[in-house]
Length: 193
Image (cartoon, rainbow, N blue to C red; front, side):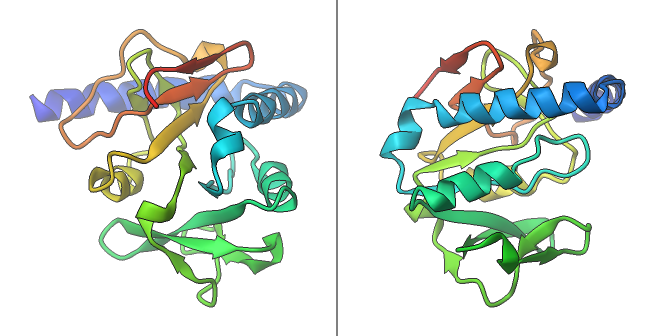
């Protein structure tokens, strides 16, 4: 059963990557702006003092402006730093200058940035290639976030995606962590929290 789910995920992952690759630069810029605006409109974001984001690269949502906006608002902002064995930790940044490319070429907090305990995070923006209406998400495949979130199910987990990247059903495995809500260019859905 696990192998079958993995194979379906692999096919869906390829379909989503191909669909993303077909977007023009203008479409990508528009979608990034719309999705960042939708995330900033999330009612729980006002209440959150500490927010965990990711630095979007490639076909992911460009989040540099979002990171800067939340820093300017006085939020405590942390980003993931990948560790061995597909683990990660949250590290606080006070400026985009505190980022450097990690082993994957993704801007990540420098070693000097302080580690933040997961229980101090109020809201986390979780990446994904596509999502379904139950909060399931299809990811790149590393499992970093699922491992990070598994011990802290109370964290408010939000995703962002264009409507075409919402699907009826994302295949799941027992280790997959569900989101609490998703922001799209046209609406904001919150299932929990």
